[in-house]
Length: 213
Ligand code: UDP
Ligand code: MG
Image (tube, rainbow, N blue to C red):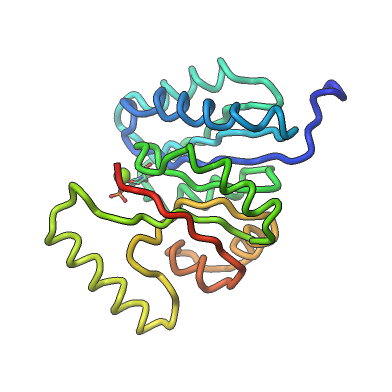
């Protein structure tokens, strides 16, 4: 690696993908644009790790092409691929294990998690003393009201039962530092529920509100 290319921090962005062929190109473009807006100036490098969770459409082909086209050390695209569908939890875990960054992002492939938030998330974990900065979905516009009611009731019930803070709107979309990530990776759970684990491991989280798209 060229010495000039070495940057102070590295951010790893993990994107689980199940049958997302229609989204891959656009989520890459939006994410790269959001990252290029601050990473060069702030001497940050990044990698985007897509995890193909056994998709049956053209997702894997799209990921191969994307990874081949973006090999630059400071802005790399990589992918993992499962032999079958294991579920989003397993895909996120595999991505976290594979990632080499100082800061780690979990983000959906369908742009429901706006990449434009990544810059503020980085500033929160880098300069404001937080271990984690997460998105707080403020409304459920466009969602079936019955689903909204059921989701709210579910999180209320399960939060009370487990004494964990897994409030409605608190999802997986977040940037974590290495310390928090390593404590998640050290847990021996086989069947994981990441939203519970984030709360269980403690650590200081800043919430940034965003709207459903
Ligand atoms: N996903 C996955 N494996 C699955 C189901 C979903 O990796 O078995 C991914 C999916 O491609 C997306 C994210 O997990 O990037 C969230 O999935 P989805 O949008 O279906 O969930 P929701 O928006 O309802 O939370
Ligand atoms: Mg979605």
